[in-house]
Amino acid sequence: MATFLIGLLILVVGGFFYGKYCEKVFGPDERPTPAVSKADGVDFVVMNKWKNALIELLNIAGTGPIFGAIQGILFGPIAFITIPVGCVLAGSMHDYFSGMISMRNGGAQMPKLIKKYLGNNVIKAYNFFLWILMFLVGVVFVYTPGDLIVTQVLQQEAAVTNPTVWIVYAAIFVYYLIATLFPIDAIIGRVYPIFGGFLILSAVGIFVGVMMDGGASLTNLSFASNPFAQHTGGLPFIPTFFITVACGIMSGFHATQATLISRTVKSEKEGKSTFFNMMLVEGFIAMCWAAGAMVMFGRGTDVKTATTLMVGIVSRGFLGNVGGMVAVIGVIVLPITSGDTAFRSLRLMVAEQFNIDQKVSRNRVITTACLFIPAIIVLYFSKSNPAGFNILWRYFSFTNQFVATFALGTIAVYLYINGKNFLVALLPGMFYFFVTLSFIFHAPIGLKLDERLGLEPTSYTASFILAAVLCLGYAWFVKTHAEKQKEQILQDVLS
Image (cartoon, rainbow, N blue to C red; front, side, top):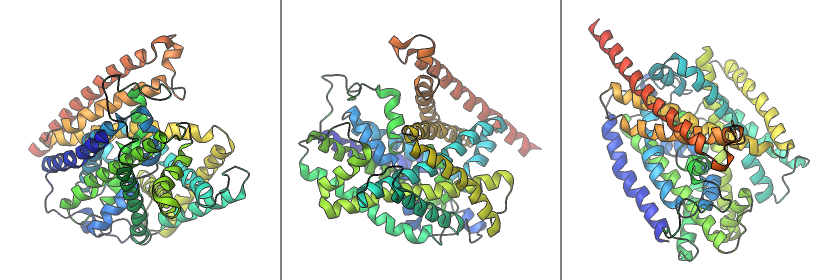
């Protein structure tokens, strides 16, 4: 219990002070935000502060902080420290600056920001990975809530031959279609507060259940043995833990959602509560579900139990049948409220790239249809192939973290050319560049570098060395590109 409570203290106290520092570094002021200066009644719409914060939370809180945390606790109690530290120093900072820089650039989405601050060559790579990420988010966040509804609510088997599965999937797609086509405040702004109630209630319910357990099943961190080598399956802590937990610590997907909400924020001074603090709440959600899973494992639940089934076990184990169902509904809501905005964000990015006017309803319908048709095809493949979903999830997790390194590089360049402390973004960017590359160099879904070079006995050694070298290259690129940007700005002013 002590390690869990220390982790929560790091999350709350560390988040408060580092959030204040990040806000000071950026320097929000009274200038008109895009929601005011570019109001169009569709995507640029002023919404209440509390509503923006709640929508941001639901946008970013997909299955990552639930599924990832349950799998992450298999690495041992070190997760209770790593999650809050990473959430404060990387995740919340990443979300805050992404949203604020977008506001300073007219509510531009991440591709435009990447192009402006990292250049024309980088944007090509970024768009490739980002569009894959957003597409996979949409598909994965139909699959996971759909299966939860079928197995946990309807108490049926989520088999490919079960017609109920496809009816549920179709219903989720219909909701996504409605949420994607209509103005952001017409659907999302109206229903999200209701969803938010389920989300918060489920997280608080798990937290209360863990506290009432008295910590008997919560293992504390001990250095008597290596705290980084306790995974039940022998997986290495670095880089696998950070890829596994994903959204509970940091997510590249979040930058796309922060830039979306930057178009509905009335004042820059609302940025900390809207972006930074909501990521802290997501960290709290991850901590609670990780603790709940550890308690259930301590009570004898098999660690090999499927994650979707663990959601029901944890929920009903602490909250009973009625409360457990409310918690399950909250978990179902998480991916759905991320999936709809993923498709909305992807629509906006495609529209920006090809200059498609989204004020025209017909254009929005055509753009959305072009996204949904291939999504349905991939969903069918992932459901009919026994290994299909695992493949999708692994690529989603890697792409999610890798995309974040682009945003962190952009933040570092922005802060550098404005005379701010750019290390707050550069250092986490270097770390995650190392984590994602070392993972994909070694992983079966990637290059399998160790196996190809015949270095399997030393496992990640070759991957680590190469990733470390490229990590230094990442820092060099960000610094030199920022210098060039600064010189160009100076020349423009002088001319």
